[in-house]
Length: 264
Image (cartoon, rainbow, N blue to C red; front, top):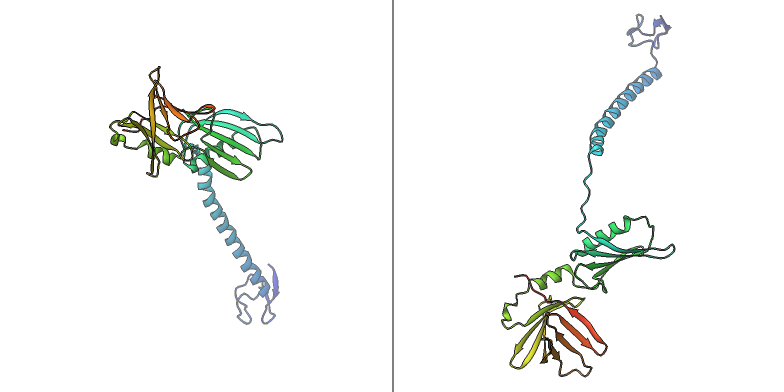
């Protein structure tokens, strides 16, 4: 039994006594400092219990989520890398073929995946995109990381391309051929005849239209040559026997377009 003086009357009491037998004060053997210490101990125990319960509650769902298989993000388009050139100290240059034109956001996403998925570590990366069916000599678009990302569109955007593909050419009952010319100012060219003159309408995605007149001459191979009477540089078109449209200039053929059929 531990004894100490009562905190009030100094009568000797047991430290565990609830009431002093001499003066009747409560907890006569406990000092104020001891009360505070006991209170702080109780509060600390409560805080530790609450904290442990909170951590346990949070860890359950987190661990469950971590154990789940994270779905792989599907890129907006498949792609094939046809060339990948990198030399230490020089920019990385990549050539890519995609099956269709992409929106700018999807183009940047695909370019970012190509840049990241490689053993090459190049701050400067230039990625040229071709759409299947395009000439191998030109790119549809380019995305550069230098190191910030920048897109450059050389051909028709996906939106403008679909607009032209949806053109209704039934207004041309005498249509002799149609071709899609790609590029920043891409358009559909429609050849038809009025009297002895051949006309080509160039129809743009905005709905605008230009008309040019040509003098036609049949070719021995069954093709058709179209001369611009106002041109002094021997520039002309040739529709060959297969239906392809060729653009000719002083230095030879500068353009070849395959027949274009809009969506019915």
